Image 1: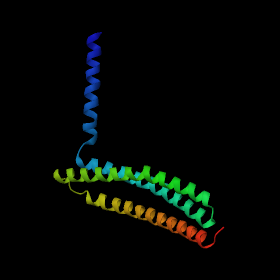
Image 2: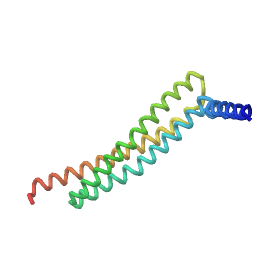
Image 3: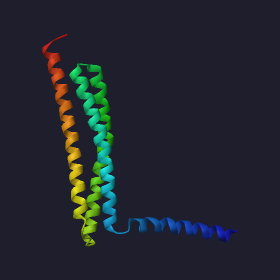
Image 4: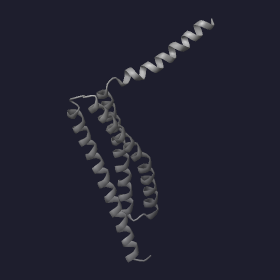
Length: 149
């Protein structure tokens, strides 16, 4: 009974050690996985942050200071949680691309360039939405300063 338990435990340990090695395969598949993860994180950040920025802009244009404060708090919170994941994904992608180059993996450019372009476009839209929200808040502040209540 004891021998079977030990053998089963060794088999499980061996499988646990072997599966990640086989799953990572070559450097090309690691780059593909990184691109997928980065794309998913950028898409999630885009959807969330553009919506949050829109809420800030709408509240500022309506002149509702309490709603602006709440929306800005939500935007800051989401930025602080979503953007570090994107930065980490980018660092991992760079590391895996370097490993792929060192392993002389070819043909990744056709996959990497379009994916990174799409991600850059989404991040550009996020920055633009945040810029618009910031301008709306500044306009609200200027309006409240020029017309005392």
